[in-house]
Amino acid sequence: MTAPRGLAAETAPHIHPPKTEIFDLREMTNTDPKGIVRAVREYRVEPFGLYLARDVIGHRSIRSLESWLLPELGLRITDWCYTPGHPRQDQFYIDVVRIDVDEGCWRTEDHYLDLIVDPGRGVDVLDTDELLDAVLAGLIDPGTAQAALTTTYRTVDGLARHGYVLDRWLSTVGVRMTWSRR
Figure (cartoon, one colour):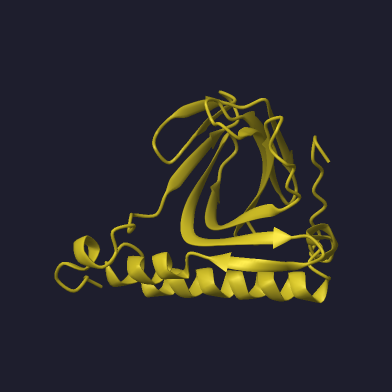
């Protein structure tokens, strides 16, 4: 699908190709979407996914992050650790992603949609406009966009059915995440 003339430049200044990340278990690195290679403190492979913990260097309010990559669910779940002086936020940040796995290297392709889970209270879905703009611009195909929306609906439904408690929902689908910080 191709974009109408000028769409990316005129009506969607935030539009970008899907972001990819590489998680190299052998080298203990994480290559972010900008190509910056970052050291990883810990990788842990479980039957349901990959855990990672790494520092966030040079950010004014975030000190580190912990994430779980869950291939069967198409999700990356992140817990941010904030620097002293910034209030601790108990929210989880969820990216809707495709995850490719091989023995020593995992790769994610971000499919634009993000969910912010406020445990016990609710969930917000973000960046639907980015997903739709990416389809119109031909950066992501309609089938991939539909899959991303299906993943989002399934996740919101699962969270709602379990009182917006992430661990409660995930335990019903065989995922038992552990965190260093929690």
